Image (cartoon, rainbow, N blue to C red; front, side, top):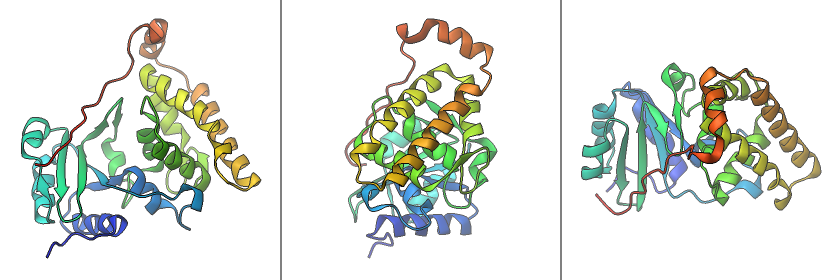
Length: 252
């Protein structure tokens, strides 16, 4: 019988506990992480199904992460891991038809989100600032990303601290040093406000979300931009500012 759990949230908690016991720096990200961080549960309008659970480990921990997930009952995507293992790993929970993505050291899709020491600053998930960054670094948002991002703004205030808040200072710092990330993130942040009215929310909840979006937007714009940011901004959209992440399908 497989050790993996049928409920994806329960399975994520099991993996996190096992990683802690083995001293492996492994943190949850993605929609399941946002669900876990909702203290009173997600608002019903933001509930959704989760197909997979995604993780990030510390730089240089690829070999340990591979051993760990195989020990937990996961099948490695052998060819993908052999080629990309220093930065990203894929595993399959064949009992429940789930794919598990494990980023190593940093999150790299349309843009790169670095972690460093911040990876260990929260006990179960990556910090809320990075959770929002990984959601809004996607050039074309889909419905689940919109839901997840709005859920974060619904449940958490924006200030310059971590913990139960979205650290606007951290987001502003990263956007101020990377014009491409700024371009994508702020465009998505602006678009996000237009989605609020599509959801059946109490008026005060919708206003709270909009206020937090605007507060973060203002924090980002107020952050002094680096020389590199200013130089890249002169080129603007004439040159592609994002990567096209590889889509991986199929079994191991």
